[in-house]
Picture (cartoon, rainbow, N blue to C red):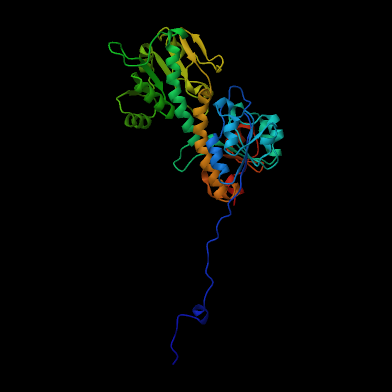
Length: 398
């Protein structure tokens, strides 16, 4: 009787070793055109970031003067391996184009078909023609303000919100000066002098950093928000006791009548809610300051109207209003470093994964930010807003 063996003759022969196939590293060809949008002085990559990319074998073309607004010179970029272009079109001819503001219709003409465009979207300033132009050129477009990370956070939006929150208090401090027709108050807990009183609407990232800055300068802070969980989180992360409340008209009126500065930082899905009516503003102190950080979503104060970096303020009912959208552009170098710190690892990761196509298959955060894939619109919000055909990105990338 033959004995049974679980192994066949084939199993006992030497077998081929299965080795892991290494992903082929992709080479990136990145273009940084100069920003042309009014008052936009930021740039997506700092010279140090360019150095990190070029040392990894990637090519970067920068239009001359692209970093001037953020105090980065052409020489700094050149020393870090970038090619400085004096031709407006050359940076747009790269495989990947990085911009802060979305390209204009004229700039889209410069872009080669099937290019990857990474910029902000600024949906409410766009036209249907903008999206049709991108579609015709089969461009893959990513809105960096829509990129969501593994922690369900929008990293670039959060970073810029931190700047906006801190800046709102610094701006208010300038405007309170008697030289700026303010009430002549100084932020700071000066001996024998009552502290400055600040009211903040919104307990999100902008509100948090506005509160931290105001408390750091010695101010007394009150924060209003309809989310109890946000208010609790804010109280936990601050090292000082603060007054918090839901948005109740009587409490808001009382707080505004006593405050020196009011910050608007509540962002709604479509439009920011009005937290302070015109009647409330009328009862504020003469020379007090309103900084409406949410003005790009309509504003939190009924008296708010959009202003510009060149003419940033107006006075209504004796109250100084600062209603400039895109506050981080005022601090262009800080904002550029902040954006660059987020972009650089993303770009290096795209290269390590073997190029954009491979990365998009596995990187959900990149797909979240994508609104065009090879000319096909993949963002439902944009599709609904402009009545355009839409396809799910997850069905396009296999």
